[in-house]
Image 1 (cartoon, rainbow, N blue to C red):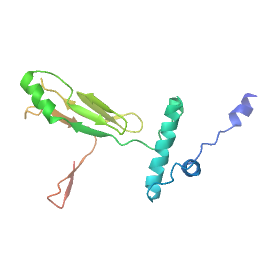
Image 2: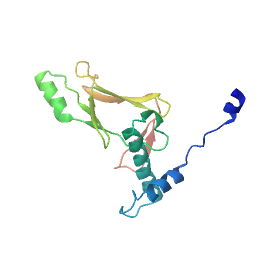
Image 3: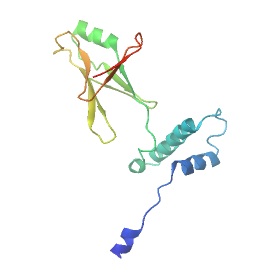
Image 4: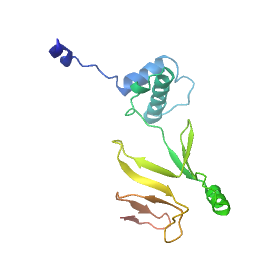
Amino acid sequence: MGELLNKVTVKKPNKEDIAKKWGELGFLDGLKPMGDKERQRITDLFECEASYLLGEEDKIDTTMGKLKKRIHVNQHVIRRNTKTGEREPVITCKTYKENKYGHQVIIKDDDGNEVARVIYSPDKPLSCGARLWIETENDIEVINENESNTIEM
């Protein structure tokens, strides 16, 4: 019996099947004409949101598509903290769903490994005086829009 169970494979629906399903349900009707990439993002969002609403967070396939995250530095909070001595979080991480605030942000790759860290350290600034910076051990590429060259470090 164990051998039989080991031979059974569950076919994971592919992205085209999922997009077709949401299209057949009418969820893509009325949207402006879009390319394949935009259509895939919308269907990924529907699939993820449906699993979340059904309480199936463990079934959400995070490889299908990811929410874009934006990291904001709130300069007005840095100034206020400097002036008042408070230590309010100055970094905001935003998605379409929520905002989270912190003093540090760890940026991870798909395997969960840290690739960079945004650090707010008002009590121990860098020697140049910076209270907020980004650290990484990975290779970086510096782009200066005023110059035509790109510098890799």
